[in-house]
Image (cartoon, rainbow, N blue to C red; front, side):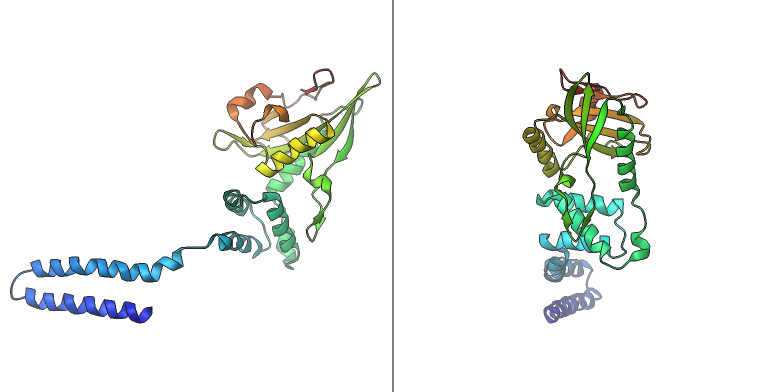
Length: 269
């Protein structure tokens, strides 16, 4: 391939030189014609060499992004965003990919940098604790609190269900419901993604299988421990994993108020 390019370049140089010599005795017009005629040949040469290098096969794109994420032992928010875009475009399970990356980082031996706290993950966990504190212990009992602990790709089934399973008790009447907690630093494209498509489907299946209402607690801005805005959205009200800011408005909750559950209407406010 390199020999062909050199041959083409040599041919172009010869023609250009010939017309430059001729133009010194006549005019510059032949030179312009020579360059114009040679241009398509040059473009073909560039295409032959540059084309394959610029095209990255789909199966390599994700792996290259993953390698960039694990090379220093720190999975940054920016790397998460890039990988999420690739995973969504390929229709893969984002949770599984993330768990694989984190597992590979933990085995990489980068002990110093892997101890760095991912601020988004910390805010997410702080937001869960923020939500838990809003349930009065007199009336609410936490039956399950799903964690994200795993080792070598092995994790509990509860990791894939909503974060909290609670029981409300009042006058010997009990009701069970679930809450998924999502903290976001800000809105994106006029709304917020409450889960990836695969998660969203799992939450719907959980609600149907357990026959309990599922709610999405969404914190926006501030920090996980003290969000600037708070919304409580019934899963059954969502048509997809993305909800617009306009649709969220009616589910706004005062940040300093505790939660109240109404068994008759199966609503959480």
